[in-house]
Length: 262
Image (cartoon, rainbow, N blue to C red):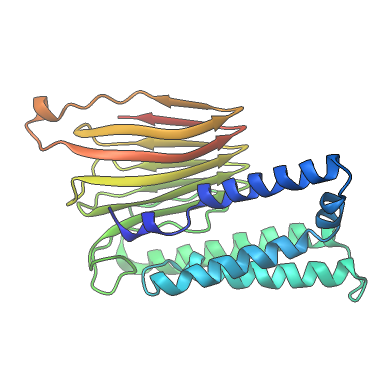
């Protein structure tokens, strides 16, 4: 397994959030009004999430994408800004910032994708909507992965859709996050040097589709909550005369769907 699996995953963060909310709701129901206090100061949660991400980043320095490098500082910055607005130190409407922030993220992402495609010719990755990150399978020394040439899936879609595809023969796993949108990951022509890899999925009010190679044996360990998970894959390693590889898909589907196919 890659080092990705040893760090805090989106599923873990989401689970911690659910547990914390349940505890606060329980305390509120027995007369201890912590929930109202937390909801009133919700930007502090952004600051805490950013601090946790920043702390965890120290253990995986040099192996993260640009999205993960900037995400902790962005969360902390937004948390501080929104909390100052809550305290009326800054006079602006929080809702008035949401659309400009989304448009800003979309614009930066489009510019970055244009620059990365450049004169290199066709790319294996196509994106639609707001895709925060997606690793290409360009096997070059110095890429942000465990070994030079390794490819790690890192797809984050929000309020839109995104497509990720790769033909890399050195997959190491990764994560797929779809929030209020959809993500399609196509690794049918890819392979891994490892006998087993893991992909962590979080689909919240959105959907994800993962297309895997025919010689991969897929194990699904996804928790569906008011959502659905479908595994339509069949391992044909013996018929194809190829070594069988093992793909473990973990994560959570909340008010959404996940489909795995060949």
